[in-house]
Image (cartoon, rainbow, N blue to C red):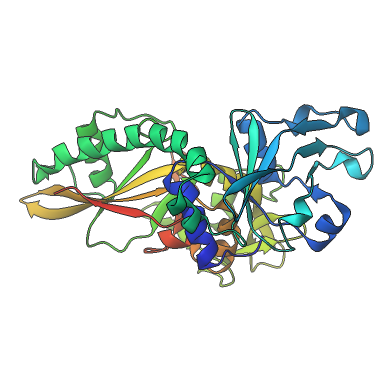
Length: 390
């Protein structure tokens, strides 16, 4: 999928700000001409998650076709009927397909279309052609569609904001230790969130990330182990053996890997558009490709981890051997534009960190971690909201 324009991102933010979940689709000239489109991984996952359709259980052939009521928003602020057909053909390995009736009346090739769902029905929004910002101001049919999503979303957001404001009013709070993770651990403690190994969002579906206000560290996005079946190396131990180095008496591999340029270990990221795989590659002739991640798996991790996130900022100061924090503001993002992830990897905005070290004679990898360049939230999320906690 191509990168979204700023206008398209602004329109997408109308859905995001109101708590509407979505997937994105870019119709092609061939697809519009033949009245057929590939149901890409993100769309399939969205339809299954929202109980619309599960391609993984669908048989091949015309007798197994499914139909779903669908509406497309048009510029006069009305929803036109455009029912969906979802199927897997007998040919081409049964690749999932979909089509919306009369869709070529509402979209041109390379338009960006958001797919949403409500009460078992599909809703389409052409972000390239339809000005959602203006239609939201008008009220009417589009505003009626947004209303139930907004009411549900606001309650949890306001609850968490209120809890953070209570913590902020306490001023500086003493922490234990001064590691990079100390500020996040302190905030979780103050919110009553117990430490646990779960990768699910922290607070009723909202992920919480805390950082020191004056730091310019990259944003932690998510951890994702490689797809070992696709990878040339088959374990973190093999990775440590091949690319690790001895420091402080033990083997370890702590490094950042980005696209295009090899790091001191000879590692770099490379995207194969033919197979839709993000590779960790190597400059070694005998090991040109090392680890693999299916792009849709990375997008899934981003979607699950950051469907809604509070990026909390804290002022810090020293008090003897301890560090104290005053939580002062929140940047609130939601509905990541997962289709932007691979382009941002290719442009070095998203990088990978290995945190692999030898422990008790074996490799212990805390990651790998995918991180976003500091200040890059606007590249991966619709426009955020900033709340002061003071």
